[in-house]
Image (cartoon, rainbow, N blue to C red; front, side):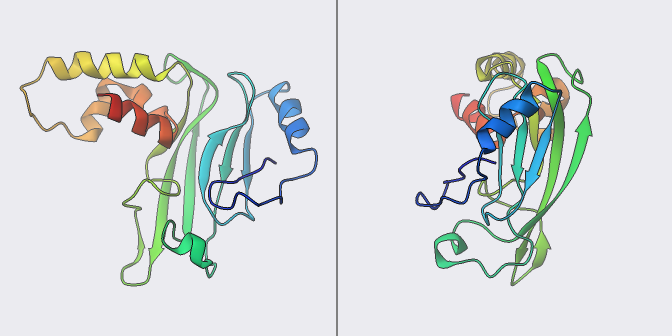
Length: 177
């Protein structure tokens, strides 16, 4: 439904009138759009307001990926866990988490270990701003011993909004810390 040019900037395979469809969906409830065709998995919001549809480009399950992609992504599959829009403060519209697996010739199906594609545990729905998440995590970390290891599961218990950030937003929040 939109031009997905993360790898191939010359790709013109977007759905004709895709942006109009996404605007129509935004004005008529909460939507999750799942599509295939592009071999690069991605999780984003459509352009628009805070209730813009969530778009999951599923990538490929069993494709022979062309050389431009082979070094960046693997075949993946995903299980989505959807939740209500008010699961935590600051969420609006569709909320949820994505469990992902990728295929590796040497190991078979494993959890992704990079941020390329859709990482395992990716989320969507928190649209209240990265600075709020960073402030909350900074406060939490200031109460700990310096250099203390804090498991992600514990961070998610203390700051659940971190689990509902898009993958690139979560990476930005952690970089800002």
